[in-house]
Structure formats: C-alpha cells, structure tokens
Amino acid sequence: MTTSPLAAPSLAPAGKERGGRRSFLLALPTVPFFAYVAVFLVLPTIIVIVESFRNRDGSFTLDNARRLFSANSMSVFGQSLALSATTAVIGSVVGAVLAYAIVTGSPTGPLRKILTAISSVLAQFGGVMLAFAFIATVGRNGFVTKLLADWGLHMDTTWLFEFNGFVLVYSYFQIPLMVIVFLPALDGIRPQWREATETLGGSSWTYWRRVAGPILAPAFISSLLLLFANAFSAYATIAALTNANTVVPTAIRGAMINEVSDQGNYPQVLALGMIVVVTVVMFAYARLQKRATRWLG
Image 1 (cartoon, rainbow, N blue to C red):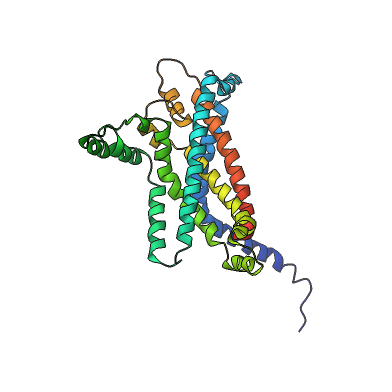
Image 2 (cartoon, helix red, strand yellow):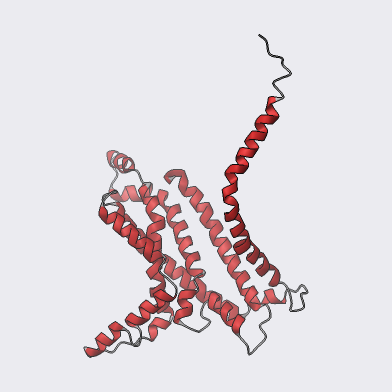
C-alpha cells in the first residue's frame, strides 16, 4: 500500500499547532510571576525614570537630573557607596573563609546542615528586628552596656549610630549571605584538580594561585557585587538606627516627608541614581556569573 506524497504536508501544521499549544500550556504557570514583576518592579521603575525628568506641572526638564550631581546628593551617594563597599568586602572575605571551612567538612554531615541553615536564617535577619537586637545589646541601655557599667566599665554607645556601627550591623547579614551564595562555587571545585597539581609537582600555593584561584575569582567577585547591591539598597535596618539622611534610601525618605521645603521630584532623582548604580552592578554580576559557570556549572 502506497501513501500519497500530498498527505505529508498536511501533518506539519497540525504538529506545529499542537507544539505551540503545549508550549503555551507549559508557560501558563509563569504568567502570575511575570505579572507580579511587571506591576511591582518594571512599572515603578518606569514611573521613577519618567518622573525624574518632569516638573510639578508635568513638563520635561533636566533640572531635576542636575540635582543628582549637587553637593548634598554626592555626599549621600558617597556615604552609601562607602558603606556598601566596606560591608561587601568584609562580608565576602569572612563569608568565603567560613564557606571554605564548611566545604572541608563532610558534605552530608550534620555540621554543614546546621551551619547552612543558620546562614540562611541570618542572611534574612535584617530591618527593624536586627536594629533592635543591636540596640538592646550594645545600645545606651543595652544588656552588655549595663553589664559593663556594673563592672565599672563605661562604654560609649554613640558609635553604633555612626559609620562604624552601620558596618558592624550590615556585616551581620552580609557574612551569612556570602556563605550561601559562595558555597556552590566551592562545591564545584573538583578534588582531581588538586591531585593533578600535586602529581605534577605543584604545591598548595601553586594550586590556589594557578588553578582554584582563577576558577573561583569570577564567582567570588560576582558574590561581592551581589553583597554590594544588597547593602546599597538596604533601607529598614539603617532607618531604624538613625533618623539622619545618611544613605540614599534614608535621603529619599527624608525628601518625601519633608514639609519645610518643596523638594519637587528630588526623591525620584535619587531613586534614578540608585537604579543606575544597581543596574551597572547587576550587569557586571550577571557577566561574571556566566563566566564562572564555564568551570563550575
């Protein structure tokens, strides 16, 4: 029995239709996620960008954007960048050491499970709760402060509400976050690489300098950038510690609630600067992550 050659083309559209319907059904569960992202991320970002170039009457202007380079704005951004960079470096270095200590243990042991669970919790422990914990511990009426006073040691507590205090508080969640994000990269290091280095006569220093170091460098730097973005956008923690417009998020709050002077669209201008900084950082993070997965993926 022979089949007519004219019957074959008629099967293609039906197959394509079924394939398209199957793809649509598979993508259907992601619709709520993309709708959420569009409403709560994309749309507010567009509004901020548009409003930063508009006057009160709705006309287009560049005067608002020029305020981004004023002395006050540069001071606030400088403090935010310094705080984010400092805590990112401290968190990445200390967190990488802790992550390496975890990796050297048993991969299925209880110690690793406990430490990763604790890191997961502490990485999310921020905001008002974290600020209250430090104030209740080393604040003016904190437990440790009172205890030291009973022993005749009087501790100055003003440092907690200054730059050094902010660094300590931010490091509390930056270090465990580094443990979580850098642990998979360390898990990707194969023991055969060290064995091959030792077989060829290389030392431990040679292994870290020429093998493991270059492979882990993109993952380490991308994790550092992630910590930087995390600290740069943090608001609730520092807002609970101080009412001063110390960093960009608190400066935006101050401009929005200021009833003395007309701030115009200055909050949107500061938010635009934050969007630019975070976009650049996350773009570099994505590129480095892509490079890191070449060996560790």
